Image 1 (cartoon, rainbow, N blue to C red):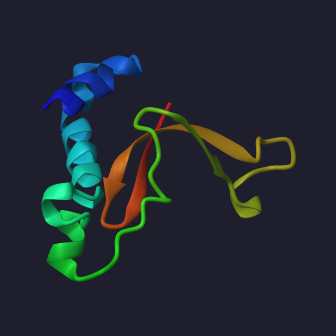
Image 2 (cartoon, rainbow, N blue to C red):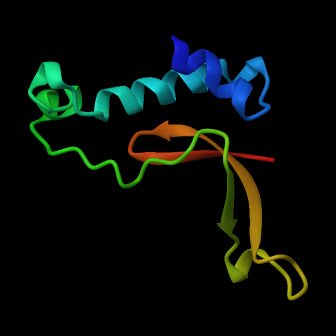
Length: 97
């Protein structure tokens, strides 16, 4: 609960992000190795797949998403600014800033 409680506050996000913070904290904890589990993660024990942490991103950080040519005009920006708010079904989840 400490992770969840501190995440939205650290990034200046409101209480409406508490649920996403809980989901993200659970996602990270379940993929983190534990000495109790002989340096395996709960995810690894459950699925039998080795866990990679290389895709983890800081909750609440700025994210810039590319806008395809087909969805912009010549003078439009090539990216949109979002906020990273968690993971869902193997994907990173962003919200417009």
